[in-house]
Image 1 (tube, one colour):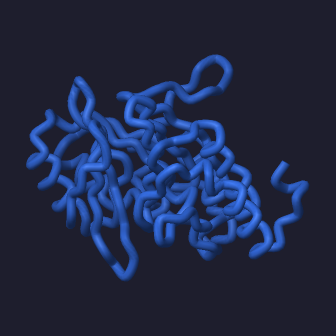
Image 2 (cartoon, rainbow, N blue to C red):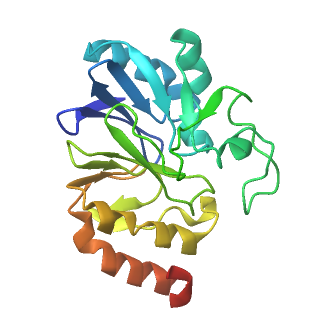
Length: 232
């Protein structure tokens, strides 16, 4: 596993399984937040680099969504370092196996029921900031997919909202995406936030992604025959 500094407060942890898989460590005044946990075999490497970073203790785990390549190490890490785990309330029943993910044939019990808590929301249903990160609901790849924006560093931790190729935005993996039209629609968050850098789980960083968004939407909509009205 390779650790690389992304920005002042964020480090990326990457392994390779025929394609890259990332998790992220976010430093804050009270310690470290882990965003996603990768596959189950990544737990020891994540814990090793957490201790190596020496930026304080792990305070929490934030999940972009509940697929196995993002939550696989949760149980092992929490057993070693008991901390709260958070995901969007919409995602919880899918990762717990109570509901079947769209386009899947059977439930996935990817995380122990009751282990993950719902991200806090304000009275208007907006997700509240956590440790310097502002979460945004971006459904499509999964029903309760969330991205996390570090406002100070202008870095968007985008999970599987996108993949990337040669520094360009690329569509999420189709076979694992619940609703490609909805995922493309959710990509508008990049235009709203205009991050300096976008981090994706499967691929390298994308810089100034807002400048690429129009072409990304056009190309992906054409590739998957998505009518324009579905993106409005």
